[in-house]
Length: 361
Image 1 (cartoon, one colour):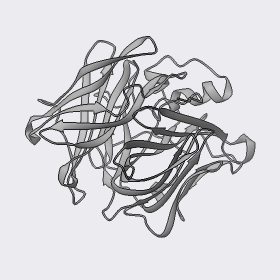
Image 2 (tube, one colour):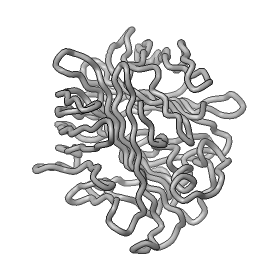
Image 3 (cartoon, rainbow, N blue to C red):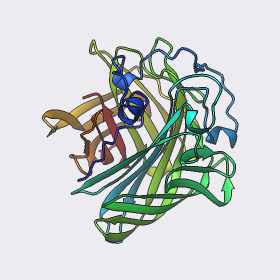
Image 4 (cartoon, rainbow, N blue to C red):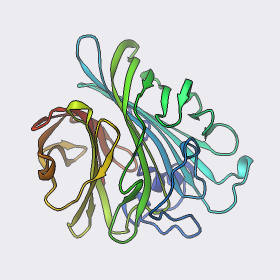
């Protein structure tokens, strides 16, 4: 296992300045995501998404990420996971400044997981000097040599085809992502609530990628195929100050249905459950919380703490009752903002694969 101080995509908003610039302490909400965002644009219902423009950055908002997870198998059927993320954090609001005075900090996060190992790498960059950025047309997101870019025939409505690359000391990957269905808007037509007090993000996904390519672990190249999921989110204050973390699932269901589900935890023990059910024709429907549940069933001791690494998920109105199992229960990121993230399988009323992210434990 390797770890170059990685943090989760949502933790980055609070951590980028502290890690990259030696800055302040963030006390409000998990990793500062509940901190007030005076001067930045606010998320409100009813936004009209425009593509390809919305594949690019939104510097008027404080926090943003481009995020891919891939469930992969080799020729012998062994399972792997791959992750690539690019984060943008605005240090101050106002008109964008070029050069070294640019307000944006960027972070790249790459990972590969097998049943026995979990490899992670991270890199930082300052905006305005070409080291990291995102261009909507032709689509390209990069930090140093890590990149997610559109290939010939790129379609802004499907966000495909794409090439995904990253490399570190002990792992690398080069993957091609294809999709034949449109992206989907999460939450209420892209307005994703995080609390009952107004916190929200703009959120869309492409959950229908098929993947092929090569991952390399400790010098050994492995041909892989599988399924991938891309998330795009931006906000200025996505959490309330008393929210301590979340448990997030992206699931590939039988018949090409998809499920995105997350539980946000509060200091007083209460929780909020949000999600979307996605049909094979890209229709995305927000899931009502009453009667639905996500409950831990198995805990794993990691880094001196116990984490819920297996879950029971029930959505009665959808006839879904499943149990999840991690590929590698030790998929722990022991970093400045520790979290767990890795590929999972599930069985029960439905069976399939997906990814789990847990923060704030």
